[in-house]
Length: 122
Image 1 (tube, rainbow, N blue to C red):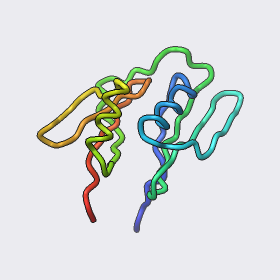
Image 2 (image 1 turned 180 degrees about the vertical axis):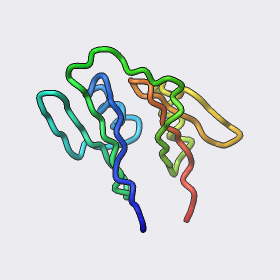
Image 3 (image 1 turned 90 degrees about the vertical axis):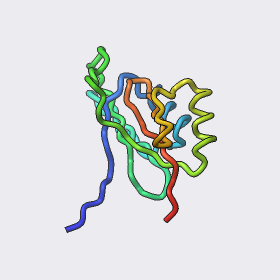
């Protein structure tokens, strides 16, 4: 039996701010939006994998989300790692670097982390 990952959801405080962050920082595009009286869902996508990041804004929630130790993160590979890092440093969103592993993390407006790693051939 084979499973294919389709999407991951994160809840956000400001849907427009989050859409802009994932567009500007990672090149994701809005591929679908669903509005209801209680929530807004935006699917962001890009690349060849078909994977989608689902951003959900609960309209009745005003307080920020408690991410606790923030042990869960997304991971994105990029061919030009140095250029991506320079871009993210200019944006001020690099929150952690691990030079020994050749990776770094960026933080979105809600405090979620994304790992940025070099694409590996093959």
